[in-house]
Amino acid sequence: MVSPPPLPRPPHTATDRGGGARARRARPGDVFALEGDLGTGKTALARAFVRALAGPDEDVPSPTFTLVQLYDADPGTIWHFDLYRLEKPEDALELGVEDAFAEGISLIEWPDRLGPWLPRDRLTVALSAGDADGSRHAVLTGGPDWARRLQTLGESLS
Image (cartoon, rainbow, N blue to C red):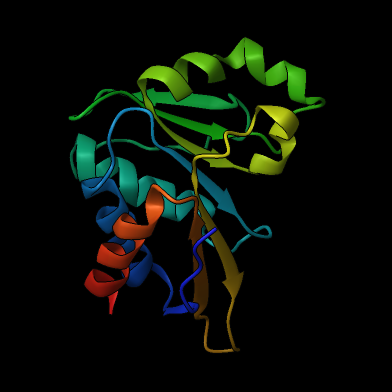
């Protein structure tokens, strides 16, 4: 796994930029695993990502209760999963994760709930709270295919 140094992230403006930067490099089959405690910005990041591809006025609610939301966008359908309430990994199959991984762009909050169904070829975005100033930190890791893309992304966020 490739892991650049943590990027400091002020609250929502930088989260929006980060989501947009990731979205512009997305292609069907990409999986983005969004990790972090409650309130660290996973949904805000996903919202910025979706709006960067589906349009700035796209309504992007948290899928906490629906578990998955789909969005038509260019270059492909975005599947936004929130698996916090998932009881067992097998339940994710009923949500269409296999189709999402094969044909769509997947944003997954609480990806650890997928267990063995979490793809190895993914970009993990680990979000954490920063200091008392409300900042956040994002650590990006990915397999070999992501090394070049992470380098480009890191340069565009600095």
